[in-house]
Image 1 (spheres, one colour):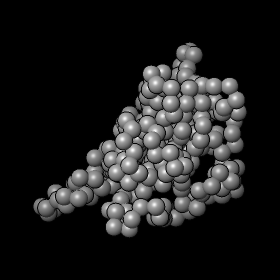
Image 2: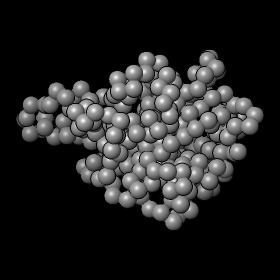
Image 3: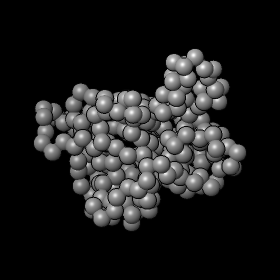
Image 4: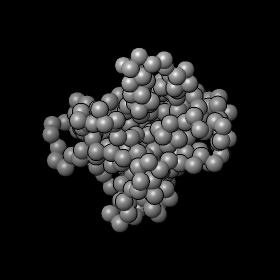
Length: 245
């Protein structure tokens, strides 16, 4: 069993329909509050209306949590990640191709995996290094390991931004995780005394208590209460997530 990786969690934010504040996330983790209408999206009041009308639900989720977590510090290094990326926009483009219709240039340009990273950089003026990452069920885990690698090289905060949403109906039979439209952002630094510690450890064999919930939602349950651990399934194995004050 590996020793794992430990990071200092200096701040976090999350958004889902009807579950936005830390208190609401605590109620959600306790089973006292459910996620609301999946069609509801963040308002993004800080983005001009002419710009935000082009944003997909996924992009809105990413920018909302990134702005909330950054708290005005738009010079942070960022790692944007999503398992399926702009899958709904891509699905629409494929449907247009199947019907022999011309593709929308705007939709095509915003269908790439680094869409959220690019939109955030443009909207906030952040010129710091940014990475876009996808790694199947291990996406959020690999983003955190990427953050650990960057923090090993530079002694500054890194912000990880993750968003997820259910697959389009045509792909839904192939889904292997339970999820809702949500986003979460984490500000991370080198492990330090007095900070909340986020620890990741690879698990061997077939551990008990593995959840089919999206890894980000499992992590949010820990963040909401400020402590605890959960085992999540990756592409080729399992990961133990731990949060300690």
